[in-house]
Amino acid sequence: MSCVQDWPEPIIRVQSLSDSGLDRIPDCYVKPVTERPVVEPVVTDRLDIPLIDLSGLFSGDPYKVQVTREKVGEACRVWGFFQAVNHGVPPDLMDQARQTWREFFYQPMKEKQKYANDPKTYEGYGSRLGVEKGAVLDWSDYYFLHYLPSNLKDHCKWPAQPPHHREVVEKYLSEVVKLGQRLMKVFSTNLGLEENYLQNAFGGEENGACLRVNYYPKCPQPDLTLGLSSHSDPGGLTILLPDHDVPGLQVRRNDKWITVKPAQHAFIINVGDQIQVLSNAIYKSVEHRVIVNPNIERISLAFFYNPRGELLIEPAKELVSSENPALYPSMTFNEYRLYIRLKGPRGKSQVESLKSPR
Ligand SMILES: O=C(O)CCC(=O)C(=O)O
Image (cartoon, rainbow, N blue to C red; front, side):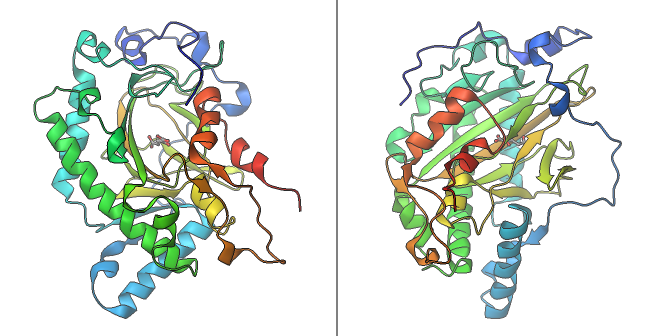
């Protein structure tokens, strides 16, 4: 997919830096002043993304189904984000998935290095996004793997340790896919499209899906850097399992950054750029970023539910008219995601740059 063969600079594992006990972060992690976070004390009654109980969707009661759908629709139009509880994924499986990945990152470096990734596919253990020499880096390591379409899934590229890791991750991902499928129906119906419209646009049952597990080590100067720079997700929709009670994710709301307070066993769900395009911007793919912490590490499992790479994605014809012309040209997801793979996270610059002038 990409013509890039290798990383432009030697890879440094952020976890090793953090474990070395340094008290100043290296210059390559220091963000320009305008991008640095303002680290505020945690306030409990502040503004947050909507929290939606999805149990109504499974209730069989048409009224509850409708009310729940409307809440999801409003969150996608206004925030591009929401937290979901009672979503159908068993809570203990969520805990097991988070725990097994935490144990992966706790292993000796030699074991993790077996899976070191390269920028051709990004699959495996990584420590940077983007290949620009001299870029300011984020304070995180990650593990990236493909899940769907099934021909891209290769268990040999998934960590073999800790024991039962592949089994737990497989079970977890199969449940999260079901949640993704349900949400695609809810999104389609809410947009006034046929229930399977978005799923079909993504390639039917064999849509794309991948997982990035983000590991944010403790950071001695959290006010100078970010765990993950501001970006919108290039794919369809993201189902994020955050750490228990370690906040870190910030969502842009107008000119402010809202720190999400994770609810117990909730997923954080957000619209990605491909659904913004398909919905002709009725649904918003919103910028977000991650701040880091001096006293505590954080882990998150970001599951990306995507179109198949080779399919053309464009605004749904049903949502385009002379008053509402198509805002985006058609493009395959493989072409689209090359941008973030080369340049790294860059706010909303990609989807915005595609907008046709009106
Ligand atoms: O760690 C988080 O809370 C967010 C992760 C994220 O935005 C991503 O992986 O794209």
